[in-house]
Length: 280
Image (cartoon, one colour):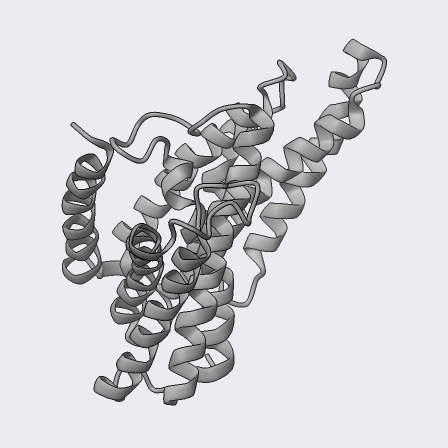
């Protein structure tokens, strides 16, 4: 089966599953959705751990810590909104990293301390901390709409970048060296269409998306731009590790990290813009 057909089949399964989880299982502040995000983040964190360990450097505990920050975010917003539980979880993991180096560093007389600490902290932050912002969307008013719209913007950016690249990108590839097959036309299309989506959301559903037309365009365009950046950032990680994909668990897309790189990078800015324009 070709890559495009595999991608279409994967989308045909994943999109309805996402819709069902968000729309029909909203119980306990979208616990099912938040749990799925945490599990997916865990798998992405394991793959990131593998990329960081390609030089045979063993990193402490981080292969399974990726789900802790999204879970902490859910528990914080659900039960302890007055306590910065996610921040404290992050500080604990980073502090534990530095403490463990006291014992781990003995094996090489602490010559690899800087590199081990840096890689481990990166593995804690990415994708875990970034993904925790997806959990926040579940706690805004009309959360189901905003969750689904976030995925529409990110997946729309990826999809239309692909088709704009095929249609108009033949002679404008190679500008961004980390991903030479990406084209300028694809990048423009991947931002332009989500910007239109943002405009249409404010125009047709003002009672749900209660922001101005301009804010809608801004929300769509910036979210899409960060989604595109997320794809390029992960490409740089894979190039450093000298691998094509972060894994092979998802047909047509590679690893979990290959599929969520755009989502996790776009989530913080999506939440930030909603916070500013909606005052949430």
